Image (cartoon, rainbow, N blue to C red; front, side):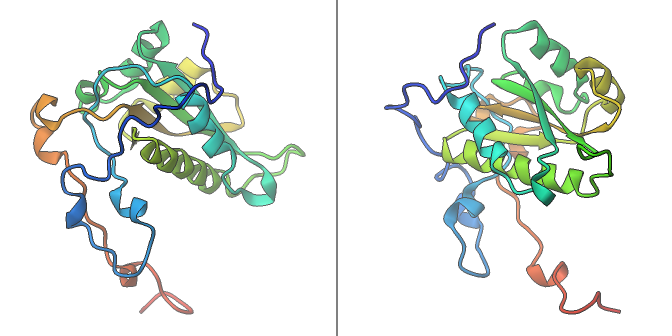
Length: 213
């Protein structure tokens, strides 16, 4: 299947944002931040529609501009679009708890990272840098009115075989992306979990000088 990765005609894009979805206003920031940090969350409800023209290119372009140590750019995104044979293969990699709600995703990604630099030295921050690229993709998806949900629950070893993972690379996660659907269309027990969750306070993870005793 030919996929156009360019921006395309986006005069009507995005069709809607997710800022007003269930539970957004229950989140409160403890310090001034941009509102999309609060309104972005990892929903599970998708419509089953394909990605809008050009959306895939925009998501990957956002990931492209993530920061990385020495501009090494170790992230790798292998994707499968809904309706293709590859999508079914990717879907079968998911844990049983993730398969039901991912059925209506528009795309599934296997995210990997290269653990070495071009000169053969270890890339110590390859996983950290790839996390930055994933966050860039997730925020771009949210701004475009899409859902992006990262997952740990899948078969890592089989995923490596499916995507032909090179020897100096590591699998990091899978991601489901699609147009936001309705909570009531989710199978149980996912409906009750379809709302933003909270976060620990910054004092629980930020310390001046050293870790507390």
